[in-house]
Image (cartoon, rainbow, N blue to C red; front, side):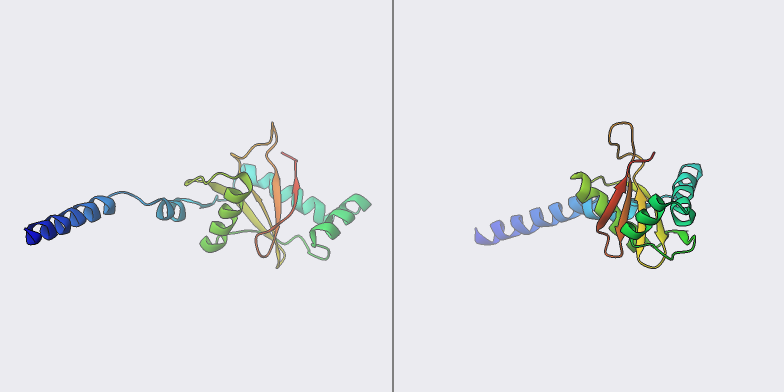
Length: 147
């Protein structure tokens, strides 16, 4: 009697394991499908905006550079392609929005050695899609409502 029960438990455990193996797990799906979008016409506006902040000589732009910690950066706006960095930026948006989106894709650029700017084109605040300026540990410095 005890042998049959043990055998049934083993068989059921095996069936559950095989069944679960066929379904994507949320963590695996998030890591495999989330990341950074390739540069395109939309992201060109992000780059143009950041380059304006970097090169404009007005006091307002100088204050913005100071507050973002990008004073002295010379037009260094580079697309983020590292999958680990992209995953961390996606995780920032998941946390910020309070919603984990398994297929979230973002535009992300590095500004100099320690700053990032990112935008999730599907994360809206009214009619605006905010630009998020992050530090090197993926923490929010500022958001700009520009697009």
